[in-house]
Length: 217
Image (tube, rainbow, N blue to C red; front, side):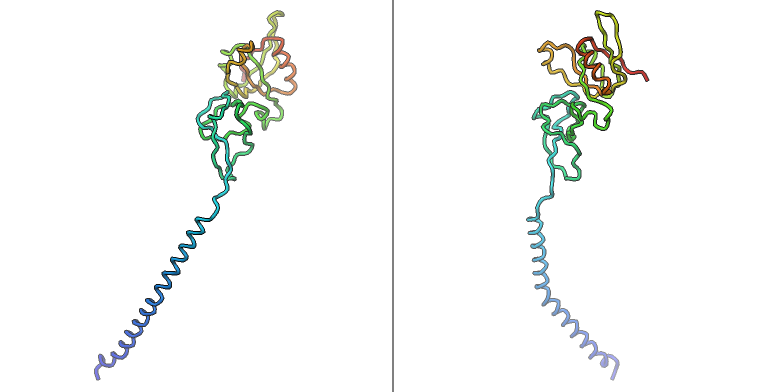
């Protein structure tokens, strides 16, 4: 008997094994496909019914805003932020408040960006103090962040004295015309004054003409 005849039974058994394996795969293919479809449907349902991620609405600038702007409802929009990305100390009820500095479109509005006590956050040694300077054109020369000396001049006595030294300019509120209509001259400047200087500065603003010089060095 030749070798090819001897191998026939082995090849037959191998063929039978392959056919049986193929039939087994075919039998299981439909149930497996059905299982995969069920898993996909369940995953889709879960994704569709899962609650949306938590967000917090934050007031942001609707467009670029200049320093001194009195905010109205058209200046701000509310945008959803992830809770961990929400800035600290968001401004509350900002409509009608005055911006201490410029605000870019989309920038969140925090209390420190508004004229008020928060302007001196981080500087407990200073008090945010409004001072009315008589010449609006003079105020137009200032920028937020400038450091100035405030000088009280008495035209009748013909003398002058420095009532606050090296104070930072914190805000330059816009002139909305209301002060002029009420007879008040000049324009407001908000400075960060030492508490010991506030009394003399307030008295000087009422009794004398207050002007400024830029602090040297």
